[in-house]
Image (spheres, helix red, strand yellow):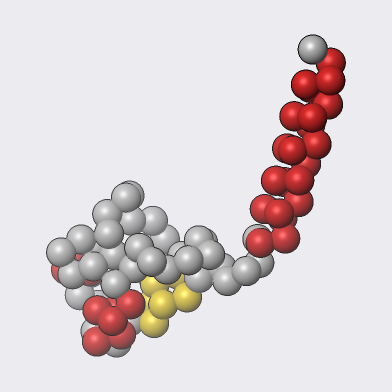
Length: 76
């Protein structure tokens, strides 16, 4: 399993050629656009991600930051 690619694309030219026995790629991101899914599947590598588990938290943080910035503007 790969846990971090250090900014390298998850493609044959990036990480995959260095890991010929890799069978699982798990990413903590919600998206998989940075992973060559078809390349992984053709090599028998399963790909999984965080899905939408952090979506609610991200939305909450965005609203919080908006509210804080509005309060900060009123204090000026």
